Amino acid sequence: MEMSLATIIFTFMLCTIFIVPCSEAVEKGQGNGLHVGFYGLRCPNAEQIVADVVSKAVEADQKLPAAFIRLFSHDCFVKGCDASILLDTTPSHEPVEMQSPANFGIRGLEVIDEIKARLEAECPETVSCADILAFAAREAVVLSGLPRHKVPAGRRDSRTSRATDVTLPAPATPFDEIIDYFGRRGMSSDEMVVLSGAHSIGAAHCSFFDYRLYNYDQTQAQDPALDLFYAADLSQQCPAPNTLPEAEAKNRVVDFDPITPLFLDNQYYANLMQGKALLQSDQALVTDPRTSAMVMKMAASADSWTRRFVRAMIKMGRINVLTGEHGEIRKNCRAFNSL
Ligand code: HEM
Image (cartoon, rainbow, N blue to C red):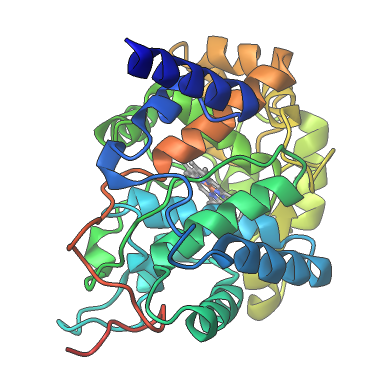
């Protein structure tokens, strides 16, 4: 009786003090074997080292937080959060995930290398690259204006990475398939709406959306869902294909959120409701009846979105993780350990 009372009080304190949802606190030490404070004894400064390196890098490039959040999501959605996205080569020598066109524009890898080098110097072969990606994404969230949250850790790194496994949705992927893609990874359509709010920071290359301006379908050159002023602005930033030198056209990017591009906030949802979504997949969230109510709800409450976003990031970070004796702790995030 005394024990269960203590447990209830402990759980209540966890739920009150941290943003971590109550179910998370109760699951501590379970749920795929991840838990908060995993490196507390093994490498007590691990999370601080990640925070230091990330914040220094962001001082030099204030757009980097978006890169870490995208990197983490592309790792987790493809075969789970196992740092497979970071491998340059694998024992099978097949083309790796990073070579997939869906990973075009991934940035921030040199910062992950720096974090790993610092951690190897402090605690050799202890902190996985998969956990580094999770901690770096958390720092990105904090540096973009959201409250600090606790990140369950204990992931291990894979020894495989195949470009053919990268089936990430593209902006023009049919919406049914996108919902299904998230669903197969345990994420609901509400959570998909919430996570898409990550597109309130960062930028996209023109090639991912310029067909909406110039070559939408057989009957219309421009996507009718686009606000006309917004479309005119985008056309300025991304001139029609073949009007710029190829190298320049390839590198052009446009911020997702023209209003608060450096803040993770629910402005993204207000933009969607006004036809100011950069990607077709973002616009679909508000036009499809399965998700439109959730978009309106998130636009209406910054607090609700913040809470749900943090919870969904933690849940995404649990997708198919390797724990215990599975996988390995890489010494270099770009290479598997030789046996
Ligand atoms: C429906 C699913 C999604 C699609 C089709 C999609 C597509 C894209 C595309 C095309 C870009 C631009 C990449 C570039 O040009 O460099 C991008 C960027 C980004 N995505 Fe997504 N995304 C999706 C879901 C997500 C999710 C779930 C997250 C995070 C939880 C996320 C976070 C980001 C971030 C932060 C960026 C900006 C990256 C940067 O500035 O370097 N995306 N996404």
